[in-house]
Image (cartoon, rainbow, N blue to C red):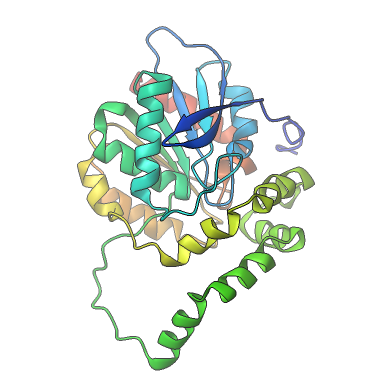
Length: 295
């Protein structure tokens, strides 16, 4: 099968960078190419640099490739902070400026896509191109808000209680639950390997992991995606896994087309994480687009 040839690829050993008193994990592969900007890969919620192993293994042949664990995820520190797009935007901008030291092509999946948009829109000198894979993030609400009923208000207040968040966290971090969740969002079930499950489970055992999880329920929404898209001036590539149950890919893609000026898009047979599910196909799209745009 397509994934089988790369499913057992080991993660590339990384190192740590100190940022605002916290240890952040990153990996680097390949060598800098003349006339070609580095590629920086950003994972989604609950994932890490490990989720890009299949992409790094191939893309390093043509690019200098970096990947970093966002603060709160993977092997990076998990302090008790208010996590937000602004926090990760600042982390990524400083990493590009202080460590890579050259503008990059940013590629982000899900939450990592939203963080990438924030950097490209609000620190444009750091980014020469953006690649979004089933990118998350809120759009401005074009429909009038409906008043919450009493039951909805009560449920929300309960879910914000520390004991409730702790119980939800303990349930969702079980390997069996991780497996079931992945099987729902991957079209190719053979891509849901024990290695992938372990990569997601392992960071959940770290000190502070529950605090990061809790912040998802408490942190206010950041800048809206439509605002960010209108601020971006660099080329943008969107790759949508059509079988993603968490995103209405066609509907969401139409919104991106509405607000993005310099957009190339592809829809492929995959779920929420197309880079991991069909890596050869995604790697080819990334390579061809970067070469076409001469980034």
